[in-house]
Length: 380
Image (tube, rainbow, N blue to C red; front, top):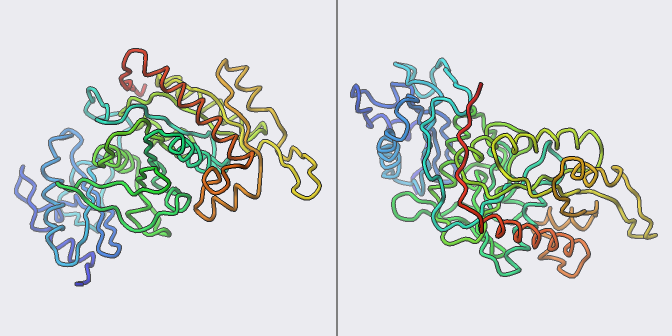
C-alpha cells in the first residue's frame, strides 16, 4: 500500500479551488489540523463564518480530492468558521484567528433532530475524574441488554475514552457519500474521535473546530434506528456542551458527581448551565459513593457520602442512585468490559441497571410531551 503523507495530502488539496476567487484552499490557508493514521485522513477546512452551510460542497470536494489518492482508506473533513480564510498563509503558515464566541456567527438551525433517533441523553459532570465516562458506558450497555436500541457518542474530542472502555479499535467504515458507519460492541453503536486519531495524538483544536467535529459525528454518521443516543460530554461547561445544547434537541441530561463538597460546587454550575439552555436535568448520580472492603466487608465513606442526594433535594431535581467505589468497576473498565456485561449478577451491575431503567423511563415520559427544539443561545 502506498504511504500517505501530509505533503501528499496538501498537494491533492492544492488542486481544489475556492469558488469565490479561484485560488486553491491550501494557499488560502484554509486547511489545518491534518492527521494521517494508517491510511485514514482527517483535517479541518476553515471558512468565512458568513458562508455557513454554503461551504458544504467545498468540504465534499476536498474529501473527494484526498479520497482519490492511492493508499487512502477514509477521509474525514470538518468545516470550521474559526476565521475568515487568510490569503497566502498556507496549510502550515501563520494565521490570525478571529474567533467568535460560541453561538455567534453561526446560522440558526431549524428542526435539528436526527432522523431515526428517539431520545438523546447527555451524561455530564461539573469536573473531571468523577467516573462520568464509565457511568455513561455502563448505562448504555445496561439499556442495550434490556432490549433498547442504543448508540453512544463520545463528545470529548480532547480526551476520548469510549474506544478503550468499549474495547473498540480500528477505523469506522464509510457508507455512500462519505457517511461513517458507527463501530459496535455489546450491542451498542459507538462513535468517537478516538477512532479517527492515534490514542496519544493531542487535539490542539479551538472551540469552533470542536463544535464542527461534534456536528459531523452526530449528523454524518449512519446511526440507523435508535431508541436512545447516550452522549458522553466532556467535563465542565464549555464549547462541546454548548454545541450539544444549541444544535441538538436533548431529551434530558444526567449529572455524575462524587459526594464531596468541592465536586458538588461544580455540579451546581453544570446544572445551572443546562437550566439556562432549557435542557431538563433528570437527576444526579453519586459515583464513588462509598467503599466496602472486600476482605472485612467494612464500609468506608472515603469521599464523604450523601452529598449528591442533598444537592438534588436542594435544587429540586431527582436523585438517581449511588455507585460505590469498587475495584471491580475499575478493573472491568480498564479491560474494556463494562461491569454490567462482565459481572451482570454483581450488586454494582444492579445499581447501573436500576439507574438505566429510571433514565429510560424519564426519556419516554419526556418524549410523550410536545417535541422539543434545541434553544437558540444568545451570548450577552
